[in-house]
Length: 227
Image 1 (cartoon, one colour):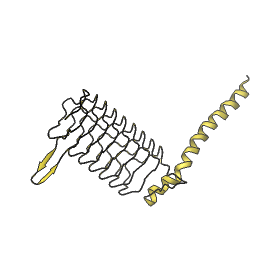
Image 2 (cartoon, rainbow, N blue to C red):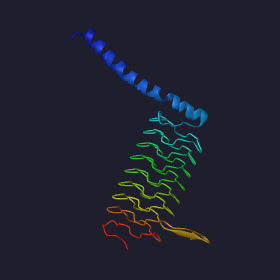
Image 3 (tube, one colour):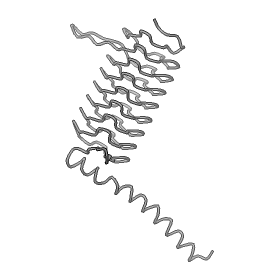
Image 4 (tube, rainbow, N blue to C red):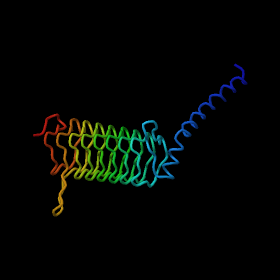
């Protein structure tokens, strides 16, 4: 093969690679611009809001409507998404470190492999969401709803789970070391952490605070069912 032919082949390969990257960026640039300018990006039966791989670090979008949006691999570190609707959204592999997710609706969302370290999920709704292998280290889940949530192999070490509803949640092989799950009361206000009928088989509960936690019908780490 002569040098001229080799140069042509290399030029075509590089052009194909760069062109592919440009096409991907162009495919969702309109959705990203709409989100940042108009504060919404809707998904319909015939069109999905595509924010995959988008750089949205530090965005302030309270109450934004992103139900069923594609946010796979998006970077939302330090974002403010208070009371946002992310129900049914695809957030697999997304970065949500230190994001403010107060009261956010993540019911039935797919967050498999996402990074939520030190995120604030106070009173968030994660009903039936998929949080398999999610990193929730030092995350605040105060009074969050995780009914039926899949937390298999999730990292919840040092997480705050006061008053969290984890009924029927699957926490198999999860890491809850040093997590604080205790129920608490202040004057007439009382909130109870509920792990009733949850699956904790194989979970790491080393140094976890379970004071006052409801464990009726819970499958414990050693496999026995708590009465």
